[in-house]
Image (cartoon, rainbow, N blue to C red):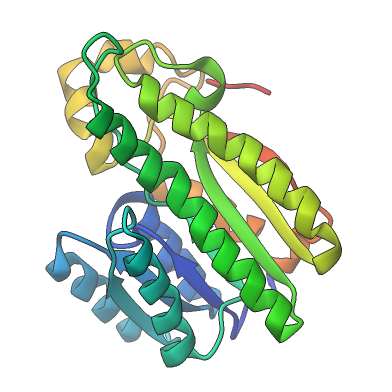
Length: 253
């Protein structure tokens, strides 16, 4: 199926590894030019750029970004426009998953999670929709949320669950605001994936995690990415404010 994405330009946060990396690869294979963020591992970012350039003809850049910092977020958006000329897709993928029960959580860790998982989404979405308005163009925003937004956390991640629940409500509100502007805003809710963020937990207690998944296996990032790419394509132009369940049955809503 041709998704009609060729020559579009996407910003993908947290694109150097995990689901973000697979989103970058899938978008590139559809002919999308890409600006993705990285923060700690420059070598991973460069390897991804080399892979994309070796297999596609798209333009791709990586921008070191501290998503918890307003100036850094603004610089990311400015750099994308300056080097790639436009942005008509925004994928808010980056997130942090800090541990700690409410009784022991520090305000610092609470704020760190909220700044990256929720505040950065608000700010980048604001920059994006204002850019689309100035250019009189349509656009698509995809936010990566979690089954924890609906189920909460049982393993000391209340701040993560709260940030992801806030993301769902924010996405619905934003979708209502910009629908007539021809910008759609949707979420995919992920469950347990084989990524660096979860790998050690899965290895320590595999039965606990697998028993929570009706399909009986952990998701691979590439199969989630393919759904995400479809969600930012013109094929979903009549869908907005929706959250798609890609949790292997953990959510079922």
